[in-house]
Length: 302
Image (tube, rainbow, N blue to C red; front, side, top):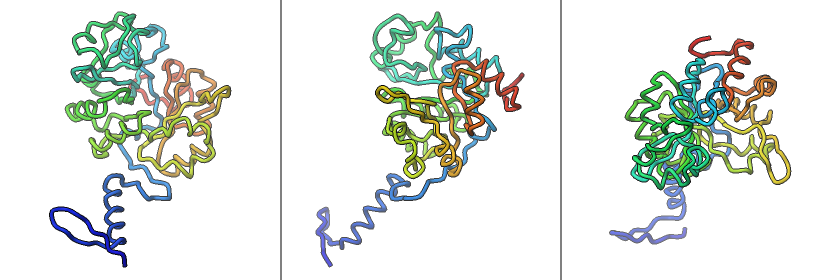
């Protein structure tokens, strides 16, 4: 048996099998899903207890009256007034650590002022206006809408830690689902919150859109939902991402499938018929009407 010398404060020897066993234990401690070849079942979470998840994207970015003021308290209030229980938003961190709701990398499209949230101090961000409305902090969102659920996308560096702290401060663990295109950021958030907050399965990049038929055998990420676009442009082609095999795999492992961003009533009906568990929309008024007609509306009022 080969002996391997391990240097340290005290010299000792361990066998290769012992070393491999120790390495496996270390890897499993770092990532409980490492080494598993079968599908990983999702852990049930209170966020996912709705029969259908209707999400107002940035408060309903194209809802009449909301144009040009997405992700503001006024936009979210419009969705809340329609009876929406679930609101979707994006978060970034200012240069001095304040967590705010803002989607774009650059502030110019929405505020008319070039630059980034990350390069500005909180006081400077507070002076910006989106359609005449200030950029809200995440604390303000939790405080203004204490009964609402939030789907939050981690958009920039530092958002994993800042959001974990905000959720803990407001004891909002049961009413938040977190997503991100950044695998490392999402993994860090999961570690910080120790599985107490629902998350979406990480997006494996554009490969998931090109190799949709292979998804059932390869997606074993932790998370309570798969959140995918209906289609994705891959070079000159539009590739369908929402796929029956993805739905079957998700449901078999206890996960939901949420599709974004869907604003057409006929498309909404087709996706619900195909097994979608939730839709993310810029037109929450249209989605509400569709769900109401189907007996699926679970809003706070009609």
